[in-house]
Image (cartoon, rainbow, N blue to C red; front, side, top):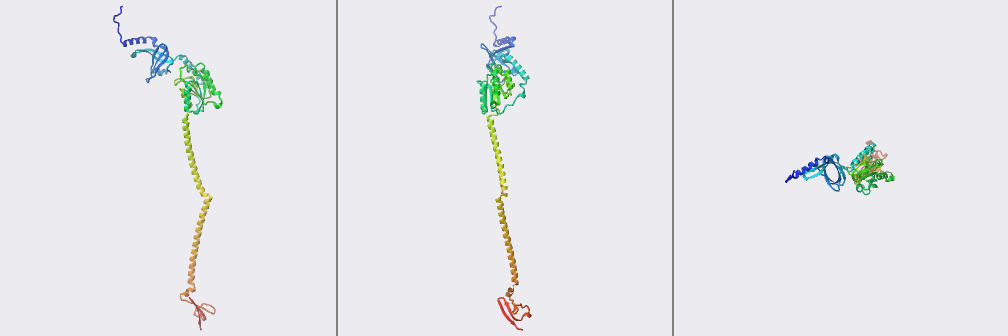
Length: 405
């Protein structure tokens, strides 16, 4: 068969459709695992996830629909090495093939995750994760122990948070690597150091066990059985702040409190901040001022009442009262004497008038005379008594008379 002089001409849509059919009809490409490094990670408001998988020679555009995102809740970050499962499809509007991922996990995560589940089940069966073992975190710690890398950003973030919220707290750092084979024994030694190798007066009130985010391999030291048992055996309450909000380690379950990030761990360790303390002091000052003011007012009222009562029983008031009583008695006595004298004067005046009325001299002044016999001085009251020489007394004197028989 000879080739046609005029081969079939396809539209872009037709060609793209044929390529799509070839790719999507290939069973191997519809159930494929692809490994690579994440780049161009995008999380739009729709809930879908868009990213690119790449290695040193090629790149592959990928999408994960919202339903699979909600079902699997993958932990993705730029530069992370992952394994993605899905199918190859063609996005016809742009003529691009892409991987529609249904599952994404860190490279090598499958075996590690199975080990994680095994250790979790074993330690949970021993009761290391029981809620009854959890101890309360002190609201106002005097000393805060930190177990983390001395060079990591997590330490800087925690120190900044503590200085901002509670600068009064003393920080004791027990540095330890947080990744790699040497990390688990170093973490155990750091936790034990803060529990047993400090003087009692220097023991921390709470310990922060923290590091920044990473893959399951990066965080594996905090899934190590030795570290988990050290956390559970700690006499000092521990707050675990390992990784990002979506990261969980076995230390999170064994700790007394889990924080989503190192910064959040520092915030949970400083429940009462310096601002809270200042506000409490202000409130206490206000209450103390009110109490003192009320107490002083009560004492002033009591003092006034006692002073008023004292006036009634004080010697000065008694003396003043007696002075007043004496003045009153004096006035009454003077009034009584005056009245008595007035009565006596009236009585004397009456008697005087009566005497005046009976006074012979008064009678004489009205033209009467008193005649007495000279011989015996008897008053001549009858004619038969008149004889011999007699004295006749009138108002202005007397004279003699002689009656001859």
